[in-house]
Length: 201
Image (tube, rainbow, N blue to C red; front, side):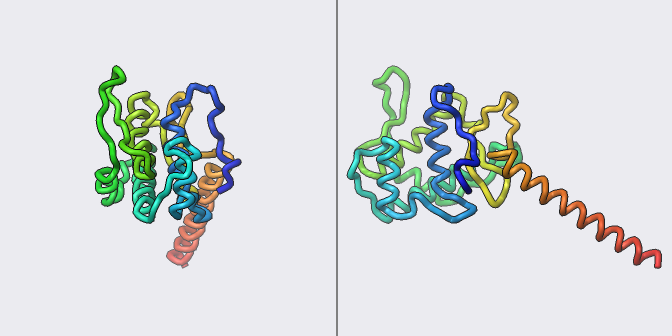
């Protein structure tokens, strides 16, 4: 999916940095094209560094990539559940991935916070887990959704007043879904007409 098709909040719009980080992490996989921005150790380390989650020149390994993928798809499933339908079940491996992330509770800053331990790739992924708690605390977590268009599944932040958005872009995915539904109804109506014609002949 061309990222230019997906509206993004403007800088300084008051949008939660934690929510934007989680949105961008889920969108490292373009479901439509299969392109994965964190599909190997090098690209994963680069992505974490570009988002200030680890120092530059941090190394990642295959285990970090596996953890990143489980974390990403678990977050996608959770965001899909925010559409208002039945909550999606996160991958069974998600609990194990969380358990591998080096986090501790910190009370020194005046309010409780989850703080990653170390500076490796696993610590960068732990910062993503901490961002879930930060977005829940600032009220943005439930606004993180995944486009209901099955060929897209792009994560977006629903900034509408009534939190009613179901697609990342009404112009692109909304129209695509509505067109598909309309065609399905037309086919069903034609099939019903043919069946009625056969029953009266």
